[in-house]
Length: 59
Image 1 (cartoon, helix red, strand yellow):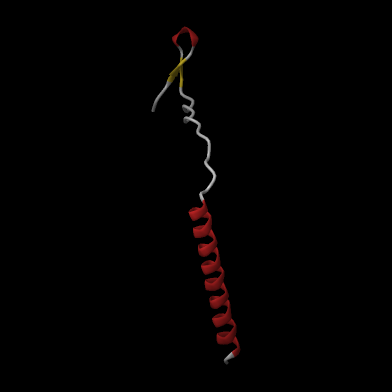
Image 2 (cartoon, rainbow, N blue to C red):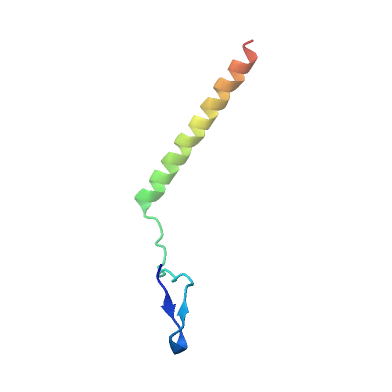
C-alpha cells in the first residue's frame, strides 16, 4: 500500500489520487455505432417482451 509523507516525516495512508484527464467527445463513427447498438438493443427487448406476451397467453 503506498503511503504519502506529510510534513515532519509522518506517514499518511490515505489513497493517492489518480491523475485527471479530460474526456473527449465521441466521433461521428462512434455516435453512429451508439445509435446502431441502441436500436438493436431496443429490438431485442421488444422481441423478448413479445415472446413473453404470446407465451403467457398461449395457455
